[in-house]
Length: 454
Image (tube, rainbow, N blue to C red; front, top):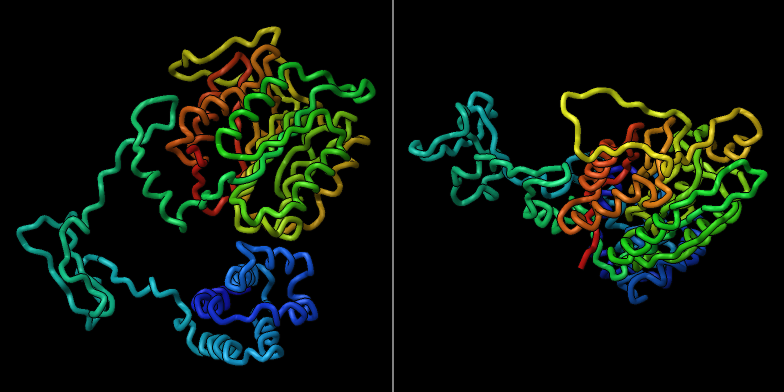
């Protein structure tokens, strides 16, 4: 759906939700293949299942159904005797073609404070501040916009940017807890995580591999599993743990989770603890091994939960945490001016989750991942290490990445968003060991994400 149709649909949303007779639409929507039967069943189960809740969900889902979604929807309205609503949308589309400005959001009319005065558009009135009040730099402010929307009185402080308070992303220091609180309250800036529980969390923990795979036992991984099971329960997730799965069973477990109805939930998490390797990819690098020695690409795992595979998670954050090697390279690091007291020597209890990248039989399991895929959205994939490098795991205390992630979530999840938390994790992990490791992520989230901790 193009932006003009999307804006029109949002402008008419209140009236559509109020007047739409959804029960009469289902057959028409199916016959025009605008929605599948499964999608319609999900819409019918939205909220309390009332007509208004179904109408609200239908209008929301309509935005995801392609460029012809709105004209097809208008045809469905006409066929079911809802001509008034059809005319409303049709006239809105015609007006948008003649005048694109007609469908701009109303917030485009909010007055904007600009400067310098020399750039004031001809014919615009200028409201000057009290000369006794200092201006910002040498700029004299002007106010543009419809006169009826002008503020009754311009206060000088409107033009003074707030002095930012310090936010430390290291392991400690000053932190502004007020800013996250403000952002949480704005749906346009942060995801809403109001449901309790807020979502499902699936942990796949592969420790014991068949002898023919040539993969060693991942001693210490059960510690990682237990830490994250506890942590995500604390973060209000429903946690399910699967141990020692073959590649096929991993995909089956993920598909089963994707086929569930997530409409009443706000978020979804997958954690995979296994051996890993490099793999061919379009969007997300790497692959993880099942206990049978067959690999599943990260790209395939992520796209099981895309818009077509799991429509009930559309528009909701989907988080993937991967503790596995990205390759076989060992990073010796480089010298810096000051050393961290957090560094720790690599000892005999530390081992990599690495398997060399090969062009032999194994990559044949990865061909599914290079087919055409939809553009990802509302997805974050956090890797324990940079692609191509090993990821270290201590046999006694678990992996560096999971141990650090758990500690950072415990200390900072109440006040910081996910991206800030992952920066802390990267900073802390990078200070460990003789060999070095730095986590990273592929971030396709549209907003900030604050976990639910109370």
